[in-house]
Amino acid sequence: MLNKTKMKSMGFVEIFLILFFIILVTIILYFIGSSLAINAFLYNGLIMGIIILTIIVASIAVFQFIKIKYTRIIKAEVKEDLDNYKIKLLNKTLENNNKIVYFETNYSKQLKKIMKDYSAKVKEIEDVKKELNIKLVEIYKKVTELELQTCIIKVENLKGNAGNVKERKNLYNKIIELSDRCPEICTMEFLTSININMKEL
Image 1 (cartoon, one colour):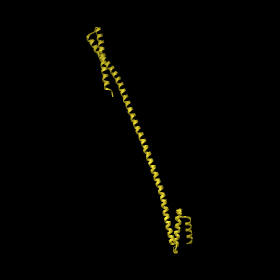
Image 2 (tube, one colour):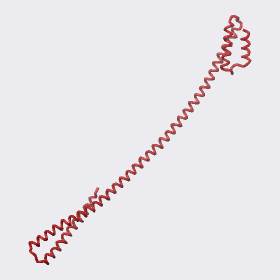
Image 3 (tube, helix red, strand yellow):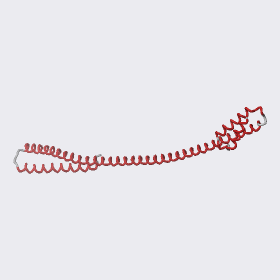
Image 4 (spheres, one colour):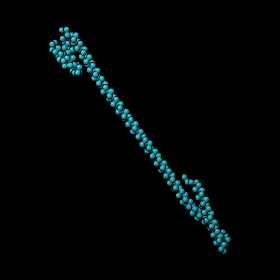
């Protein structure tokens, strides 16, 4: 915006110049009229015409002078406003860039933390699964061993009963099947004795 103080000071200077120019022209005309012997009516008309012409010319000159000065001031103020706008825009851009960098950095840290926690949880789950599989294998061995012991007890109970040959044979087959499932629960001597007993049936 145009500075009001500058406008007022420039207005006083231009008015002073116009008045000074009119007074100067009037004095010159007065001396010219005094030195020339012409009709008073023509003299007065000439004076008025010259004064009016002088005022018009001076007004145009002063108007052009004011326009040039005001144009310079306006250009300077527009340039200043544009520079201020550019600075504000640059500051805003820097601020937004800083926010983006902060967001990206913070997001990256959070993502790394999440991935680290996820990896830890996955490892923990894998460890639990391994431990569970080991426990299941142990339980399976225990169940198989218990079933094998049960079959052995049944066979021992049926040894004196000759009428249960088929049942004893089924129990021996079951014992062999269980030993095949878990070879470590039966010794070779035990399996050999089972095979001998089956042949004797």
